[in-house]
Image 1 (cartoon, rainbow, N blue to C red):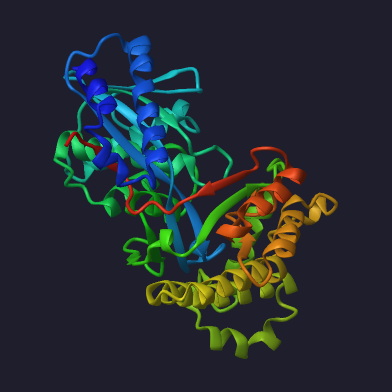
Image 2 (cartoon, rainbow, N blue to C red; image 1 turned 60 degrees about the vertical axis):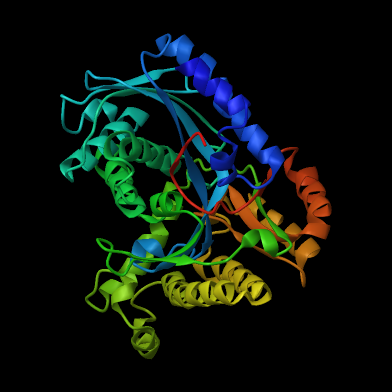
Length: 429
């Protein structure tokens, strides 16, 4: 069965399915080669498959608007991108799940008869796999064993959520292999977050998994984190004459945990002065009215970060509305505003404990120099180190990449497209 599937990929019988997530014939051919290359991995890991093999994909994601808002029940605009993790999978009948990911040098093995969180698995990919599958089983869905080999183009540490893409991939496999594709993208995202929180032991929000699972541009309102409001945003990014560029400033994330944690804790500290647990529970007008009283009860930085939160929530709505109307120029203006707010108010462009190390700030300065009046740029994700995001006009793309990579090194820039949907199975047509 493996040979027939690989032959069908080569002969173009999967092209229509693959082209749904890839823009352009070159991208389709590249995706096909990645899928074909998994044949060798599978045979080396498990031998020849005993049944039909199937092909799955889940994308990475980019945060477009709503920087550091989700943890205080705010709003986010996100989008799935055309970097993905793909898998070649064969079903087993003994309740054993084996997953081997290229480049990680080990095979994760899960026995579905052995239920529950395993302390020794925390922080490892086997915990993510077990958590997603067990959560879906608890929700009443059918689960079963399988062998899978995967390869990812979503770079770890890129701010594009390689971890969430992997979790969504596992949920997508379970959905299509054992449930006829009936598990909704929202349910898969929630199962992925549950796995990350309770099995992997990382207290993440839901934005990453939701954006990877739902696909396209999506606005997410986390006012009720148990039932977030998911609103797809209808916009054809391929028609706007720009490219999305993520640049890795190649700064170290080491020692930044306290900086990340302080943003959430300071916002929640402001909310606590109102007797609330998060800023979303307080109206902006009430916050501004009490600002003179709040000053002195908490730090000025905490107040600035609260101001950023409220402004970002408004910007997310405005960004989504601009895209829906096809007003890309106003959308770019709002992206730049978001970036300046993150820099000046949220203050997550460099760490105060490493004030002389400012690679993200330098990348933003170079972006402004090239793109001012034409494109848009902002810090991407958690900040302090790592990546920035830019929307670059097609005619400036080469100059932009040449400039940024001359400073941060060859391969620092990733040119991306917005993928129109999330986790999926590639099928022969």
